Image (cartoon, rainbow, N blue to C red):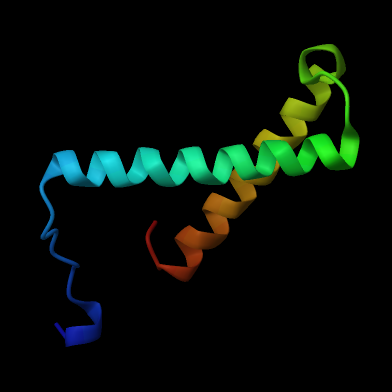
Amino acid sequence: MPESEQPVRCELPPEIIAKQSVDRFNALATAKYMAGQVEHGGCLVDKVKLGQLEEEIIDLWHYVFALRLRLKDE
């Protein structure tokens, strides 16, 4: 197998990966939420609609599938 196709080896312990993952999520999610507040304003609980969630889920599906194609992982 060529070097570019070799699987990536995990060199970090699971606890560090988990912490880095959660820290990244917290930073990105907070920034995105606050940007949404500036753009849309108001209380999310009062504004959110089920149809919006369905649209976001559909977008997420397409993003995952596109990445799967890029990584050639079926």
